[in-house]
Length: 100
Length: 451
Image 1 (tube, rainbow over the protein chains, first blue to last red):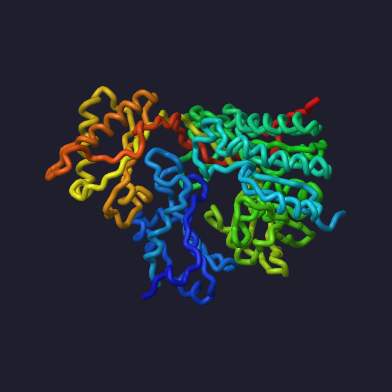
Image 2 (image 1 turned 90 degrees about the vertical axis):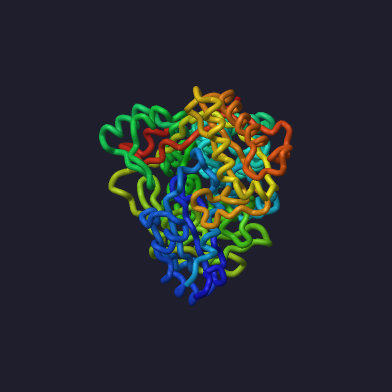
């Protein structure tokens, strides 16, 4: 078992519009990309963020950037009462615990 | 027919700035148009709701002065999308005032086409009745209440209103809310270039040098659109575009990088290729624009929620930190009890050092040796928000918890006054798609000429 953070070049989060939160994992090495992407599943993401699996909207493999993109339902609309992160730029840290 | 059209993007958002040296390098490459994006929904609902810009006037004026001077001197159009940050009428008028001031001060003349994107509520209500609206993302169907509530309600325009303005001879196009790539793709599409490539190039150019390495939101990028591909080039010797940096940018702020919906159609990147060229340039081809059977636009609206007051404090006492959850709950109860006639307020304690950044998503809500506490109240009036926040702050300051040894006060305040009235609060209430019968019709254009 290894940590994705040791092989990913980029691990980031950001709003994808005010109602979705999107995560990008990017790799510089094709082998790492291929190994990791097989292991990233909606249930793993749901577990990591403690959200219902249905809230994991999409996992897309984007070859040209050796990237895996994960999109979840935003906990609330951007800037709504209770907001902690208007831009959604600091919601990625749990992905550092992702293993493969 | 021309073989190449060059689009210069000076900066990621008007007002974010750019080095003059990069801009001049861009001008030396003889662009056919200068285009810039003025806004985003990213800074949150306040700006659309309040009618204020999230960029500062002096910063926008600095950028615009250089852009207007260069465009008029070279007789090429300057196109500004999503003026004033959110693109509703007050934002556009704010930006127009700056344009007007520059033209007057520099004694330049320009035919400026101002295009508005505010949608009459009656139009949207009618579309709801006809069942021609849909949520854009994981949210509820559009309701008449949400439309009525919206302080400002805008639609993202596509290239059509820009093209109309350019065809009528605009030197400057100052547009309300626009699909980000539209300002960049309008002239190329008008000149017969492929809309898929033009829009994809626009999608990258709208963030300027963010797509380069090292990335920057305040540096220029040039796009050369040819018949069957486009090339991106940086204009500063410290940056270059790489196939990965450009491809990676396609992921940015999107949920699916292969299929990117926009006004009137979808950008399909499933066959897109990225190739590195010498001198830090990247060539892109294969992207297709697939028109949708019905022309749809995205609507954005924000409604007023109330007024906010915040108080910022720190806690260093280990006995208190251990019990922080029950202490805050106790304070909340005390506030409720003291103001039992006031029910309709929102009170929240954010604990930085515990779960302040991620809230309920935080997998490890374990407090550190110190906590930053932000007390926040949102209520119907500023006075109620001030009252509740202030009362919660003073209650927490002197709250007696079990085992307390530090009996002089529980909070470290960095400021006096400790509480800040943060003003009006808004929330997004419309983020939906709406069908249109005419792709230009709801975007009225006005000509502004300074004598």
